[in-house]
Amino acid sequence: AQKVTQAQTEISVVEKEDVTLDCVYETRDTTYYLFWYKQPPSGELVFLIRRNSFDEQNEISGRYSWNFQKSTSSFNFTITASQVVDSAVYFCALGGHTGGFKTIFGAGTRLFVKA
Amino acid sequence: KAGVTQTPRYLIKTRGQQVTLSCSPISGHRSVSWYQQTPGQGLQFLFEYFSETQRNKGNFPGRFSGRQFSNSRSEMNVSTLELGDSALYLCASSAESTGELFFGEGSRLTVL
Image (cartoon, rainbow over all chains, first blue to last red):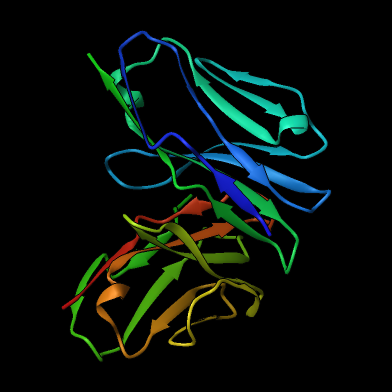
């Protein structure tokens, strides 16, 4: 069965602090895809990144970076120098082919960035 | 390029009624997925359609159904509504099943 665990329910930081959001996944697929989405207070989910299971290279996009480690089944997300606008719920998701392709989501981590 | 459009945005129903929600995907996207979002259960996968065929279904009772039309627009229906069906229903389209999902703003259903 596929499963995504985001153990951190809520995180509160002060602006300019770095913050890491954890994501651990379970799957029996050999080919799968990992995603991060952001849901700001306005409500609409926004795609941030996709990685496939064969690409373990870490990625950096501005203040955002992602660390994919197959050995620990983790796909963590770090925001450097956080800003108030980063306040949102962040979802990690896993796409796999078992039983037909579908993307399942973790419970989400609510991030509060205080000025 | 227009995004994913969901209608209606808000609706209130009473127990036992049925509801139909509509989703227009991004032009060119043939995959449409539906999710239920609640505070307690998070984002739960309902089903996915591709070229008018349901390819995958989540663990929801048969009261939840959907369909996709030849223009890729999709509808989902919930019959015999229960209080627990109150939720934000999100539609997402994708150019390919394994690709990123583009979400609509959702339809917020309240069941009284």
